Length: 487
Ligand code: UN1
Image 1: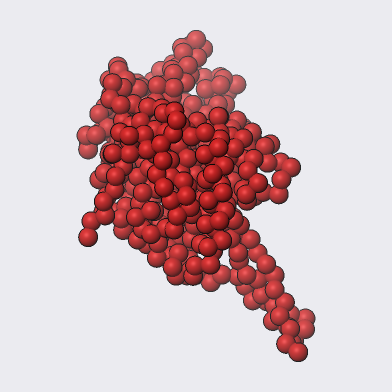
Image 2: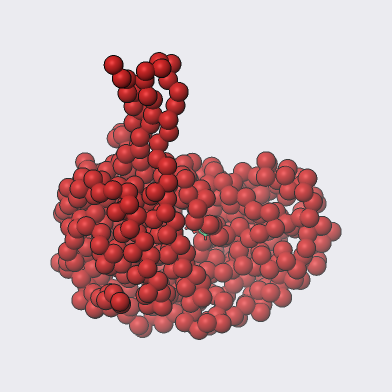
């Protein structure tokens, strides 16, 4: 049986608010354009008001009490159905994702498949043991913990993973009995409408998931100040993350913030250079460098620096950059004109600092396209080395040895992901201890995360708690400790 989704019609009508189980228009609208072809309007969206956000919280609060009373099996079943419906619409979802933010179609498809896997993981996890049983000092007392939902969760999600990140926040929030008010980035709103429709079609009761399209800065007070709010999960920039932290600082609210990265890769003299250059290329350039886990600095040991540099130059120059709807395209455009402007500012800075451009892929000189590049001769103090660029610019630096590489790698306010390329196990073990990042890779690119394990950063890259895997259950539930004594 095919499930009918009305996403394309909603995006023509601007009927993109999903509040209390009903699709609604707004008084105002905004439009989005395809970053690979800016003359193409990809959707008209309702611009939510603060009152609409308040409405969403009201419905979410009432619906949550009802939803928490469902059995875990029933909640699990809704997620399983959602995964099947999303699979049925895999190609539509993939094209919507690419239309929203330009991700090359094969990566976009991979991302939707990842969302399906995430839904299935949490559908299964709903039936895993919940709470623990402990020995009591009193033999007639049965001592245990039970997990309970938190209440209404606010999920604020970015544009660079329009399906995967919302799914890994919303699916666990829902399956452990919470309701959700979801505000996606404007540039990911089309995918958000489709995903909300998938949950609706899967039988999620009205008001359990509410979708708010619109401007984050206009709605921030309404989103973070509502008294029904129990927890916020956010992925995005450090600046916005810190404002969220401050806005709820005097309230007893759980927060989970996934912020930026400036992820280093270290290539040692004993590494498999062919493989290392391929991994670094993928980590730095795929998804047009727009992943907070992207590789943005590579430190290469002097003994192999010429070889490695030549390999990465050849690979970057051979990248297929262009129309993201073509299957063989490896790198699509940047996500939006604003994103292009921001990355162009880094390029202007590179030019003004007189850095050396080692490699420069050919890319269309139009719309939001930007040529992936490798630069070197950059001062360690340059913003090109310290700031998150969020685009396909890789900074390469030659180092004398492992110690020097690690000290450069750790010299950053961020701490999300890091990679080491070596064949030496002892050095790899040392790196795992020394590197200051929440995700550590050995002989793998810095980007890419699996759905069933905890994910998050150290230092300025996160609120230090984790998402996904067992960490998701921990975040989206609270614990009651129960002493039962028989008399
Ligand atoms: C990945 O590397 O596949 O916004 C996921 C981001 C990260 C997720 C990265 N929070 O890029």
